[in-house]
Length: 283
Image (cartoon, rainbow, N blue to C red; front, top):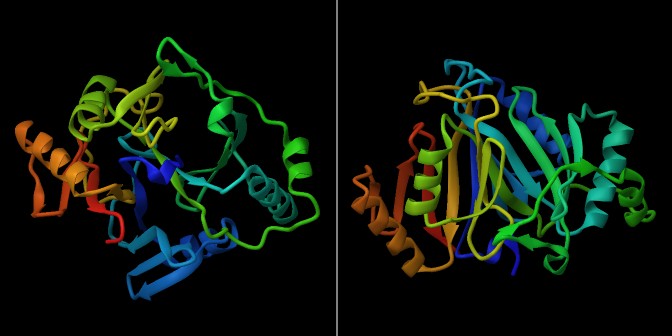
C-alpha cells in the first residue's frame, strides 16, 4: 500500500501568497511542477493531470509569523530514491539553497523553503519491509543523509521535472499544543498516532509513517490564526470511499465542530483555524 492508497490521504495543498509570479516560478523551476491551470489570482500545479499545489494570490493578506500555527512544510513524495538522486543533482547544478538533509529510516529527505518562507520537504520512502516498529510505533529518527549513495542511485539520468506518480505524501503543521492536535487529527479525522518525538506527533491511516504531523517546536502556545494571512490556506484530503467520508463527518458533528458544506463536499477547521477540505477519489 502506498501513501495515496490509505483510507485518508493528502490531495492538494493550497497556499496564500503575495508574489504569485515569483512563487510560481520557484515551484516550476525548483520542483519541476507543471502549470495545470491559471486564473488571474489562482494557479494550480502538479504532475500529469493531478493537482498537487494551489497558489492563491492575496497581496493584502497579513504576512505570517514563523512562530504562529500553520504550515511547517509540505512534503512532496517522489516515486523512488533514484528520482530523489536526480533531484539532488538538479539542486547542486542550480545551486539551490537547501536547509537540511536527513535519513529518517523510513524515508530520505531534503528540506528547503519557497520565496515566502513556506517549508518544503522533497523525499522518497524506503520499502515498508525496511521499516521498524517498536512498542507499537513506527521507528523514525533523524540521521545524516548519504547524498553520494542517492546520487549514485540516479545513474546517468537527469532531472526532467516532477515525475508523474509523485504526490504530496504528508503535511507537517505547526500547532499551539499537541493534545488538541491529537484530538482533532486523531479522534475527529480518524488518523492513528503512529510515532512521537519530543514536541511532535505523527499521524496516519493505512499504516503509513505519517500523512499529517504536528509540532510545537516554534509555535508552543500559539492561538487561533489571524486570517487572511500568507501561508497555508487549505489541506485537501482524499477519502478512499464514501464510507470513510461519512464516518469522518459523523465524528466532526458529534464533536460539535462547524462542518461547512453538504453531502460529500465539506470542510473543517482545526483548533488553530487551519482549513481542511474532504472528498473521495476521482472527484
